[in-house]
Image 1 (tube, rainbow, N blue to C red):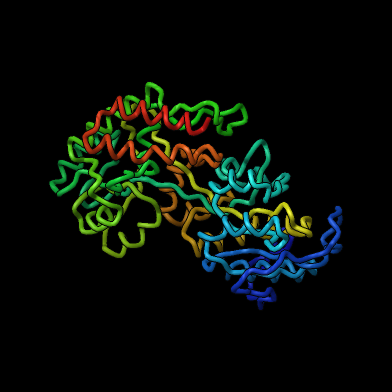
Image 2 (cartoon, rainbow, N blue to C red):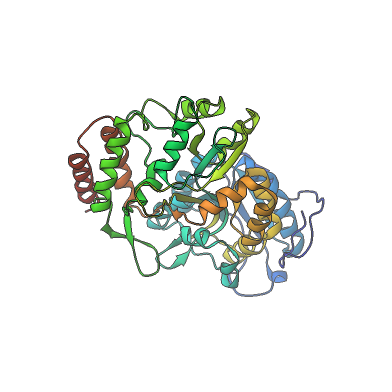
Length: 413
């Protein structure tokens, strides 16, 4: 692909001129960090990227070097290791200028002082709102987002032809299909799965945290134990007693049973679509049905590229982030290799127009809420899933949910 700073040149074949390394290297560059045109850039920047996205970034880096003269060193990392290595290495001067990552790392990155705000400027409005919100912290934006991920309801259209109006209607349609399971969602015997069950929880009016005026999460406003949360806990117990929610049906078992036609419904993410299609399942992607009467809002996970607070070439790094990695060409290419909905609205709209599966997940994602990235969320995860599992497995809903909320509040304080 050919991407200049105005993102107006079409895709083309370009020889990669960046260096793709397999081990860490120090953040490069000694250019002065003053305002100026692209022609005044100099030095180099280092970018940490995972294997799946390395090829796309090679071409973007080549274009950036051709236009600005700034060399881009691409260092390939395991995605799951990037956050901790970034936190460890940036303070020593050994980290990169830019790295790829997930938005729920943000609280840890900010609290450790290792990330700097990214200046999106007028381009902030070019991205899907939930994507920018996910990478916001204390009124600042800390990344150029590139992919949005959320769960939705997969439906086998050969078993059920119509969209369910709510949760009870879904269960009724599932029962009428005459197969083994009315509905499937993968759970863990010890920790259930709060991520997958969250849209049902929100439909009872029980978010984890309240929000500040700017839409960010307020750690001082824990709402998980409110009246809606108690109603959700009661519902969890009922679904467990009915056998619809079953902690013995893991994610792998749920996937296997759906792909062999044993249920018309599977609550999951886009990562399980390819195997369902390969199994010959005719799929539709439906909104998640409400169990409590309110909106069933899943968590949105947003991946992006963020900037080191210790970058010695921050102006060039920000230019590469915003005008290259934030271009429609690069965002589209990242979507094509990753299968996740693009964060840039123009690329998102094009993907939705060409792929009904992406369109379905996108429709659900438009109603999603960013997974909290504040550090206090760690205290929630500690107690949340084990409590859900205990309730599903027959424990007292009111007692267990109240204790969970009290334990979370105590851990936060």
